[in-house]
Image (cartoon, one colour):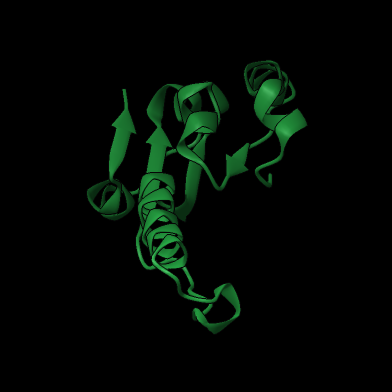
Length: 105
């Protein structure tokens, strides 16, 4: 699932419905995992905001926005909800758990 205002607003209901229908609910943001989604993998939102602040600082100091480089995310995070995995009957490999930035038990 993509990160969208409507999906974010209703993330808990969507996660509950996904588990009820036995669907593995995967997203790009950790908030969905906290709401009951199975896992998320995507850019670290806090890092994106910090990087945006650096760009804003440059603009406020006189840089032209068109001269600033377009940047891609450099920090990504993986979150896994083991409660949801158990409810879905999914066994999460130990190697994947070891790589996770957050595991909800």
